[in-house]
Length: 486
Image 1: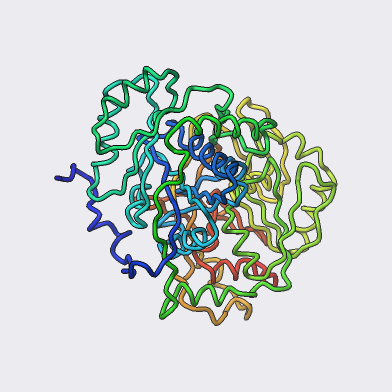
Image 2: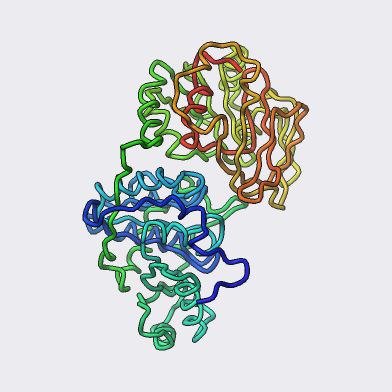
């Protein structure tokens, strides 16, 4: 099959150049599916959550992953499965990182579900890259409410656009009648599995806002919605576990990845990391928390909305979220604000990402034009806008953070961890005007165009970029070393 113009051949795809060869029979078998679609908005999250809840209700352990850097979908998927949801991305997480996560899940689970990102072939790397790299079958979710025979053409494109893509079949979403489903099924070539339909059901439709779906913890009826969605799976061909896939452990011999994991172990013992986590600040990777805990840090959570005081600790980590939706309540919590300001005055490190950075500014203007004061720990203000300001995977070289350092704690006997480059992503609808000279600037992946500024202000390290800590263990440990003052 000839490749379309601009289509990347799997042979030349960087994600496949260093793929290790494994001996069949040496791994662990587990049922697995990647839930993908032609485009965003097709219903991937609903179908993945419905599948997870259905099989969980049958007494099976279901581990769910999310392709790409999204924070909100994993909250829904965690509620559906009852298990933590980690990211899988061959660039952000790395090939060996993805391999280890999948192997660990295969050892512990009856079913692995992976929700794709955007369309099946969108992104570098894409959901299709992940499916082919690990030989995981793809379940196509097609919004067929206004389709007939074209459903088969879309199915054919998903299955055949790339040679050797493992493909399980398709399910028709938002199809209300058996007659409509029959029409779709009869148009399909026999080589493709048609798993049936999910109806358009307002009771399982998940509400959205400017950054995506509403967070799971904000939905009072989320479990009722998930059980209702699962009841629709009972009427499809997805009631049985999908075919099993063999997953392999990361080889220990000569692996820098394994050396890094050994280096991480207990490196932050005695360090207490305070993480603000509530409805206003909740965008944090499960892998970041796992990394800190694996390094021996004591993780302590608190709420900027509901707690009167900031707990005692060595480092304050403020992730992204929706401070613009809770600005009044945030600012009314005056005792908590006083504690955060006292923490900053004590010269202890503060790491702030995206919404966490906005919280530290002097002022925030929401989408209605309402201005609210913020903490004033960084000079500047931010304005919410209806137009998307930035999206995409990014990397940044944080070497300037250490160029002038004479702190012996910064020089550690670490393995080669890729110097001072941190990977992550950005996704926001606000524009910040910050009266500071940026320390450095991110670059987008894979375009290399310039992205977000990174600021160092006294003991604060802040950026719109969301860091993915396991992408550079040594750098993360330096940032979180409690003896380190920026």
